[in-house]
Length: 149
Image (tube, rainbow, N blue to C red; front, side):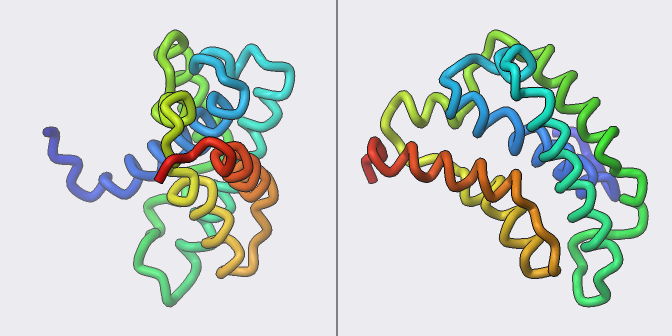
């Protein structure tokens, strides 16, 4: 594994951005990763998720009680996240996300640790993250009928 040093937190934010867009949308739409950009609502939802995530990063960086974000993350903007997510979607267009595979196998998903976490963390900081909350609730509703625990 490559040593990321002080950039590890940035890498995790990028990974969260990609997973918070690709996983729930592919699970809901039952499509490979490339379907995220092909679906009529895909680009708009991608943008909204990235905007909420960038707002959360900045709020955490400003929060004096949080050690999870730092000032070196000030350039983690919605556009930066969106560009990264689009590149991941393009590079993995034919892949099935882990969340889609979970849905197909009737397993519970990791939605609570992705969009659910973003929505809850945002709420704890006084931020609304409605798109993340919506996706989390929609995936939870879908898995409710099929999830074998």
